[in-house]
Image (cartoon, rainbow, N blue to C red; front, side):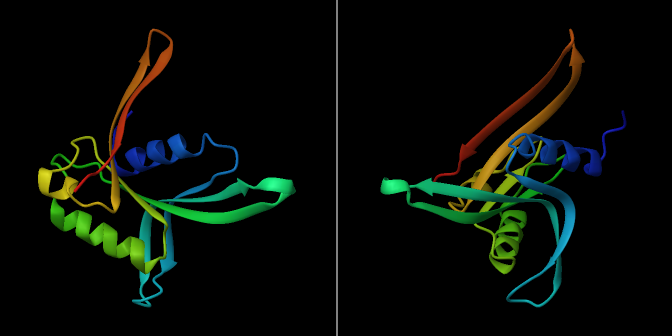
Amino acid sequence: MDKTWRWYQDKIAELFAIHPQAQVESDVTEVGQDSGVTRQLDVRILFPFRLELRQGFTIEIPLKIIVGAKYWARRLDVDIVGELATLKDDVRANLLVAVSPKGATDGASSCNEVIYGRFHYYPMFRGRTMGNQAIREARC
């Protein structure tokens, strides 16, 4: 299979679609709340977070997660992470995940609003699909 940015984006979306309550879409658009401009989202996940409290009281909080799936030959730098963080704020997402097969530079990794992941997809190997996801929370 020819690996392209769209292929990579769809593979990332498939990872999140494993959860039965997640509504996952790839390559979607939304109008930014601050900019008023139509924004493109690589992957958008809508997820109902349920917090069950005492005496049967439950709070459901809708979470919006956006993923910047960048199938690039270089690591994500601080400029692209800044653009993704601005996008997150503009579309009122609760969480931003930046994913790239090459990872991120040290400067980009210092951003505390982003979760980074490195995703390499390996096709069938001895009857199993092997994926390597190393997702960690960035620290300042």
